[in-house]
Length: 400
Image 1 (spheres, rainbow, N blue to C red):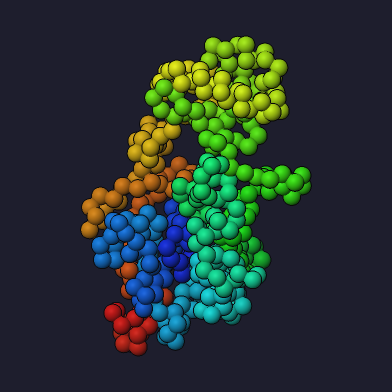
Image 2 (image 1 turned 90 degrees about the vertical axis):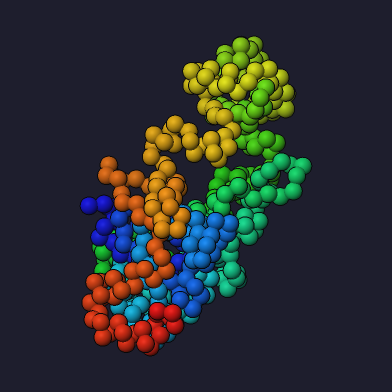
């Protein structure tokens, strides 16, 4: 058995952050039952361009493999009854909706404890269920600006920039997954469930980490650095070789000593200006000019083997295409394939979450409502007459 095969999650999730979090739980074996609102056409991620057709998109495929989809209008009285039956058979209700919506939908612990006292109600919203911004929508781009990230990203002379990937969303998904598992563990131990009130805002602020500590404690003012240089460790940034860019980092004094040997500049190791971390930080502009001059004389392929042989942390600045075909990417089984009726073979990146040695199943993302009948009959035990009555009443939307 995979680690989470005894865990069932009812997921009222959409778009990126929420589905990203539950993706990893599904990878570990959890039964993630994705509730899709038929009145809204299901998860909005199904329609994200450019690679989309009808209700299928490669965006949706990236976040929803190995899950089951149930089309259900939870605002409809009969739909609500079905939801509560699912809650009776579940460990957690997981959502990523605006902070005030869980109360409106009745999916907080206070709303569901009468149905299942052990249920864990995990809400990942933009700003959380409390605070002055609780009713505001929150998206990764918005949070990167609000949390100060854009003042730390990019060149000092350029405009504020976001990170290349939606890291607030993805980190928020990981935070939600960790919290949900902790809640389930406690509920199984104590017999009582709980709310997990998580937010992208909390996630973004918490990821300020040591620059925040420096600012709050010592008055440090975080700022962007040229060429993505580390704020305190020198050298630790991108450098331009003769034909491209490379990253090298001296996070320990021994790496700096080794670098001077690779560059055939032993005099730098003896230079008092560069003797310690603090000295190199003080004289970082002078040192950068020296390193630029040396590194620019040879191509990237000249420097990388020598740096690696000396065990100096380094890497080429790859394109996405180069990263995806890197031998280590392939050796770590980080590219997987699923079959899709519309897209054929879909290649995508695997979850980095691992536990044990067995390879997990890899199923394409579900069609909207694909597993509604299966879940109603096999899990909830509904007979054909009950299913027909619910369809007629509109519990699954007018299209069902």
